[in-house]
Length: 319
Image (cartoon, rainbow, N blue to C red):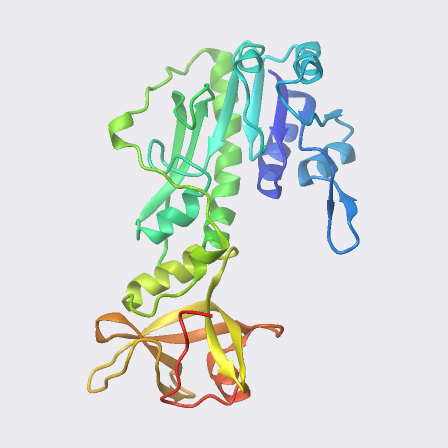
């Protein structure tokens, strides 16, 4: 199959590499334009562009996919199929009709569940026991095209968005290659999605990570794992006369039998259990790993000692 690959983010590179190693012909890559990044404002290339240049594949970087130049650029390659993974642009109808087999997209959920920008965090947030990857035909609607292939993955109790994406990435890459081969052979019968079963996973924002200590320990754990690597769960503490931010990277449940505490209160601290904070329903969580503002990641107990906090002090849900 003659393929044009559309991708930008680092997560797309594993699929791109799998297609390079397959017997298919990669004609070109479409990726986001170079952007200024970092304190110096130096121009930054996408991860997919870097890889494409390494292996000598032509790169196209249109600013807008509706521009005549972008349309003509795709037409000139005459692809059999376009593969799109974490590209960052919506694809207009005029482009969808150019490849013989259209565009096929890799989505990190079991569609129609979690259509949208953040399927992996939402699967963790909702306490799902499994998720997966879906390859589907792109159409003009958002994540609603016909399904071409699915692979399921178990969500472990310790999985974060980071670790779950690491699991899904190679599985998705393998599935894309399988679907491309089956499209070429004419073996696939596309399956319509059931819109009545659809759920949505909208884009997250920085404030989503703010810890609400009125939540129970299970829900706080789900939030901490879902919001890694971004926006990270955070709370606040008082250091001297200043209120500072504390990122919470890992928590565990704590047995509050025979004890009581208020939401956000430091209720216990020792070497065995670490820093223990009260939360909703009379429960508590152990803060295993944290990152104070401007400092390195550390144990919860070490943070407590360094910040000169003590049992009875509070972590704050507001700044």
